Image 1 (cartoon, rainbow, N blue to C red):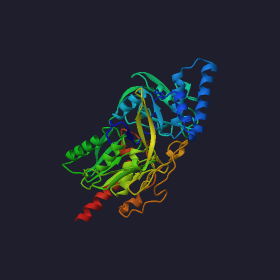
Image 2 (tube, rainbow, N blue to C red):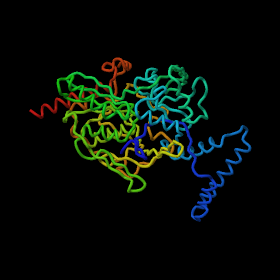
Image 3 (cartoon, rainbow, N blue to C red):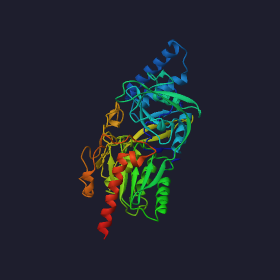
Length: 459
């Protein structure tokens, strides 16, 4: 779907928040008259009357003067955020910020957050940003900014305060699992230029590509990265590791395009909306840029939305083997609807389904080969997966908890891959991923075995 169409479909940038905002619809009086003309809307009319009475009382008697626009904006945002964790309201500034962010450049700390049960939680830091370099982790709870508590603050307001001019300082107070004392992290804001695709060669002619977000550059970046790896390696690759860990999602059309880079034909994803005419299906529309070379996809609890569309499609088509830990479990699609006054609302309008008919809403994608990041994989405070949030959509219309048929194409070595690293395995060092990234090490072992198996069967 054209990004510039009136209704823009997204696989939601999970946790991305925008300031509650502006556009106000018809007056309460005109709405009331419209509903009064239809006796079936009597209850609605009564509630709108209550709303008007409450607003009038607040305007008249609240301890401090209040702005009418703020009251209406807060009410609209409350109506949307009360539906599910991913519907929200954006004023003109927030809408513009979202458009900039999906283009891969925005200001701030480089941190994806969400709100659950009144606290602000980290979904994932973005690669090579102040948040990532400071060691912010998925599942961290942000309790204060510059020493001021976030209790009672909306997610939009908290995100607004974390943004600011480049080179300005902010101190985050964080509560982390298994750490008794608050952690204070000092960060310097930057203009975030997201390099969404990174790549390098691994031993034995295996390529590695990391995709950190599904921005407008995702598909182009994947194609360029694979082309560069082939050129670097004499024109071919024996296999590829696609790293989608901590990728919070992004644009639905980019998820379809990236999937099509590796799947020749067949369904990629379908959506089912409230009205059957609004349901859609997307099929593969490209050629396999790897020419059938084996693939392994890395996922974890920070892999959400568009990441789950891609990993689910590759898994259902048996095009790739998934390794890591279960994904986030966000199986809904948001439509961004522009509103008068240059604002917009982001409304959950459909559930999406993998090619086999799975809805991963609240369930996530289960890897074919489970491998933990650390020897002591910890449960988080909650909020690390969609199922941890309040008011999530139910999982319905698909295959439910029914598992995929067992895979028969796993190489024998898959049974030998340990589910977690040894106790003395070194702490992860981003500067030394090949030595300290246990999940990546196992992914490379697996794809090398797949390549050897493919080569043997061809002879």
